[in-house]
Length: 356
Image 1 (cartoon, one colour):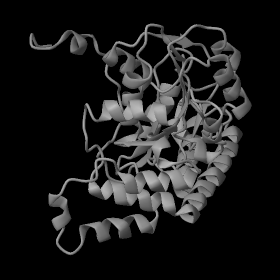
Image 2 (cartoon, rainbow, N blue to C red; image 1 turned 45 degrees about the vertical axis):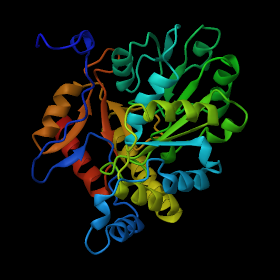
Image 3 (cartoon, helix red, strand yellow; image 1 turned 60 degrees about the vertical axis):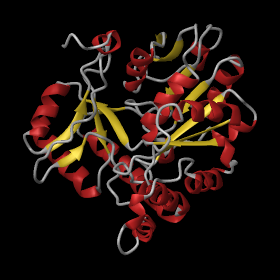
Image 4 (cartoon, rainbow, N blue to C red; image 1 turned 180 degrees about the horizontal axis):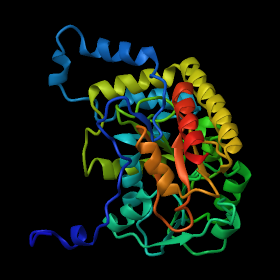
């Protein structure tokens, strides 16, 4: 701690990202990256943008990223004024907290959820109340109805549980909170859920957030977007242009646009992940694990006879990394990214020996 720190910095508890070990022959199943490469059209678009001498990199990118906004709008059947883009969905979320969730009343989100939400609240001085998940770790929409609030936010599927909330349940939350913005963070929805984006036509208080890091295999490019009523998007643009007018570089814009346009590659990758997830779930259950129903590219599992921290440590000794959260209610769970078939087989082979 330094005497030069502001009060905000002194009071912060920063988000802790998933570990990125620099180890050889590592099976990395801790940060929900896609095991498959992005569309070949992404690399082609980046190479075309660079040209022969990369001279274009001396020029600023389009501050509005119109190429990408148009691609997102086309893919989701909305108009470009309904689309906001940013440097990963985390930046988009940061602007959401400042632009749409910073009010006098506390915001609501689940007690077990994406751990960046309370960090943003600390950074932007947003009051919040955590709403307990049910005993089976699902979201009960009734818990978000009839409670005064300054906004509501939750992932769907939820993280780290992977559980999905049906669209009719989301609609109940929207109907019960017409004067609050409801933010649905759909980072993982492409792996088994139905997006809430069509509901935007009927609810001006709905904002849906996506990332290209998961289902589009572009975690290294850092691109996210939000879709909602143009008035909500304008609020995000006002914050963005008061913070950084150029959040996306030239290569990210063209690469992300190409990824959005390659629907065939996108669907094939998602289906491959879903098939591997189902097979991994079944295999873990044969090893005695309790596995929550997942609509994401990860599973959340515990073993009744083995401590989760010890399991994670034993896997690490075999160069397999999974995510363990030392948090109330979920300290005995492991979050396991769905990797390639070979990676998942190595995982289950290791667990078979550990749990024998």
